[in-house]
Length: 437
Ligand code: HAM
Image 1 (cartoon, rainbow, N blue to C red):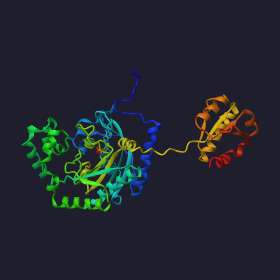
Image 2 (cartoon, helix red, strand yellow):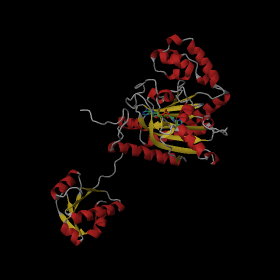
Image 3 (tube, rainbow, N blue to C red):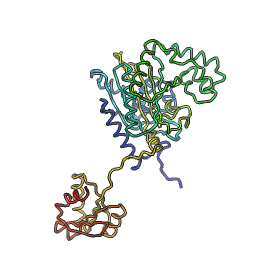
Image 4 (cartoon, rainbow, N blue to C red):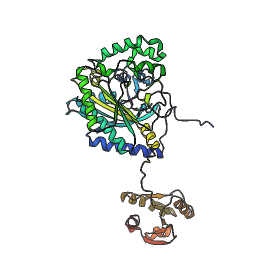
């Protein structure tokens, strides 16, 4: 039977079992990112639509097809953030972070929104964590981002992580490369899929990661960015690879890796877990999804200038983001369980109004002593409460009846034997601390 209300297509409740994975990933990101000097930032879910259309690029799929945009009652054009980089750079400019010592290293963790066709690992509301390193050039910063991502995945005990890297050149060499690419594809246009025929004019680099078989055959012979990098970009990429070698990271070159957000230049990368099916879910859409990547990123030196009204000083930057649901999917495939908290061993049972009031107070004392307890405050029958304690696997039930409550005493019931002893209410937390060690 269809329910009267359901969550919107591609958007999900995150229930308590799933929350354990979210927490585990969040804690790993926090620990590793903060160690490397990244500070937490949180930006609004909504931003001006222009921030994304300018920042990400008008011809990208994200801007053309995937944004949740609307007009407010006041007439503002707003969009639910489809990614975090443009927002972080906006926050960097707006909050005067230009005056801080460089690089400014920030991390975030939150929900993002893209109007996509939902399928395995692809949602309309999904979660990402991201890292942005703003204000410093040099391949060492790109390598640092990859290192932090890798360390986070290793901390989560993910196996078989693969990193793909490429350089897509920058302002100095990409226009020329784009030109020869357009010429190449134009002469073979009739053999390309309809989407790619359109892309020749709009976004020829994206043809390189099209998964249509007929396009792939043509892409195989296409000119590669790496053969057309200027000296500066070539040197930069070489250094990036040397850092990855030094770090012994499992990377491979993918000359067709282009990413799909327009702000990138120079080094780009994506990270996969080999338990993911790389070909699954391919469809025109997010760049990362073309291979069902766990995450991706790269250098975006021109973005701050593009989003600023003033001519900014140079703000070379680099960063990456990873999909939380994708990481959880990989963890499940690798049979990695989020660690669970120790199950409470103590169950609080009460009989009568006074006892109920005292139990609520007692719970607070256990909380302060960091001893987890279970309760059944809504039940009044002792039998029902003992049966609930049994079902929950509690080792001890503390029984507070009307009589005990008046005397300031409480009963400890040992659930395995059924034996009971009465102790002073004031000493119960200390007593249980000893028993639960
Ligand atoms: P992106 O490659 O578009 O990059 O997204 C990063 C990751 O977010 C993807 O690899 C994927 O795991 C996840 N993701 C994207 N779309 C969806 C979706 N519809 N459902 C589930 N997961 C999804 C960015 O967003 C850039 N801002 C990364 C970056 C940061 N570059 C520099 N700094």
